[in-house]
Image (cartoon, rainbow, N blue to C red; front, top):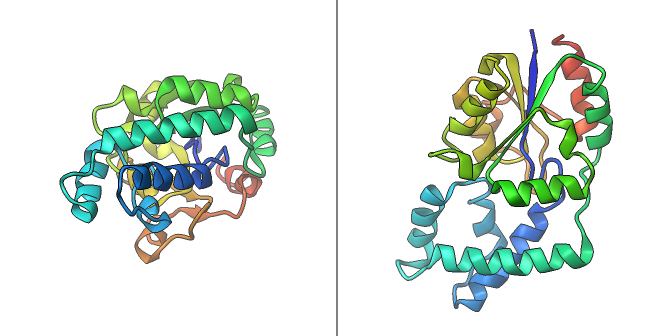
Length: 217
């Protein structure tokens, strides 16, 4: 019986992945590294401890992940302050539906807590969630299972009692390895063959998750 729904944030609830992609490339280019959109796809939801060797293998040992990341954050924050961020389609419908049930809900995002709170408050959904678990609260980030194990534990549920909503392969792998039911709502790319094997379901929008939940409660 389904008792919990755990949400990723970037690319799932808020339309930030395309912004992340643009500013990762711009920041890296400013440091002299020819990062492309395809490179950024490879590090979606990937914790720093995994992203650093991945990017150094591509760009060499001189790639300063933290310096590039900090520059990306600065430019992205400035952009969002001026332009805001948009909700992904179906988010309000899904949250309103969950609010009529006894299902507990949490956020499990690689983003740090301060920015997570800022983003979710800016779109008016922060108060919906019972728990917020962020990348700076765990030792091993996605694709390790830690964040979903902690989220389900904080909800006082077993992982297998929870659906995990994700848009990226790294997030799906994290949820699957934790024992959750991974549901993908693709954003920048569709699931590849390896990711597709791990899915409980795939949905076009967040509102399409509602009938899946209805069948599990």
